[in-house]
Image 1: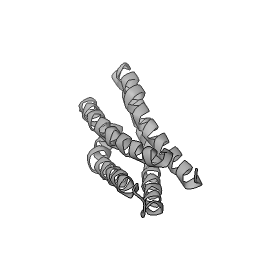
Image 2: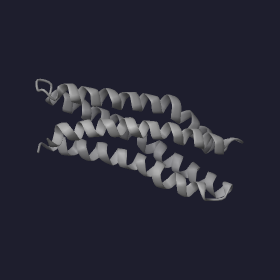
Image 3: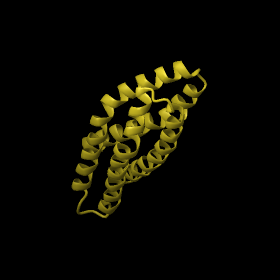
Length: 143
């Protein structure tokens, strides 16, 4: 398997895994905490992921674009183009619909718990879109 395929699969699938873990494990555990420790956890998580994700998402988009370019004259180019499109939609949607909510949670707005629930619902939608893009990439890369 080509090194670009391996790098793309690893970076994309690990990002999707982290996003899934936040929704499936971190948030449910956080909801069991009292409000003050919950807000502290969410604020710290927002800071850490807020530093990593602005690099990780574009890196994935770049690698997906390289994959599409490498497969441009094959039957798989349409599948990869769909994966690219979904990734960009999820990335831009995250910036528009999730980052502002995340910033309000990190700031400890008075209604941060309601904001967190809204954020989690939107985040699950983003994870679904990212997972479909990752499945399309995996199909082309592995098959």
